[in-house]
Length: 229
Image (tube, rainbow, N blue to C red; front, side, top):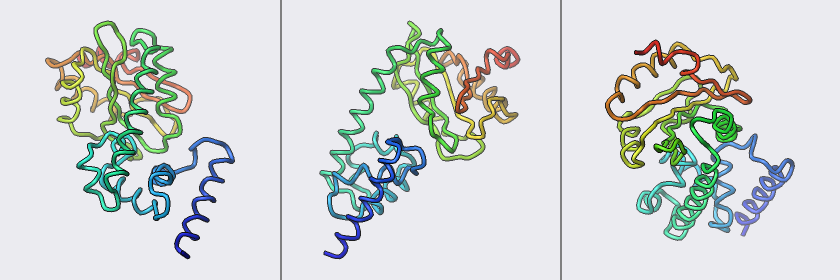
């Protein structure tokens, strides 16, 4: 009974933090996931479950796109909890696809607005892939790496799987600079050159975009892609 009282008081304090601004800025990923689990796990300590999920999957997006067997293999996650996480993941996926409708690869303003919102509040770098169809419409996205403070690193095979799974005609990569500098780093340039050469026969690698709190920079527009040829 005492444990329930402790958990109840902690949950109310977390909810009160959210009520201060009704946004998640200032909340860590494990705190967001912890609160998400409140209604799924009504009495137990959800902080431990949230940490276990993030230790296993790395980030929120991957947690919410994991399969049921992987979720139930995590300590503290039962079948009901896994089903609810899967359901929420599908809801978010549907909402994200609806946001794709207004995004066109040829319209830099709409693409920039989408990306500024996509990376809003991130304090560490995320590298994301965006699949574009022949009509220039955004059709899918994936986080390739997350949680790195000052550089980009990812699994090339994961990107190739994303391209194949989504029948990607055109690929755009984007990553954020938490330090708020939209200038591509030397590492960004080297990475993009290597990746362009690697993907040359597989897909049209259209651009690599760098996103800050209020600006989006196109490496193609800056002439870097011409220098790779």
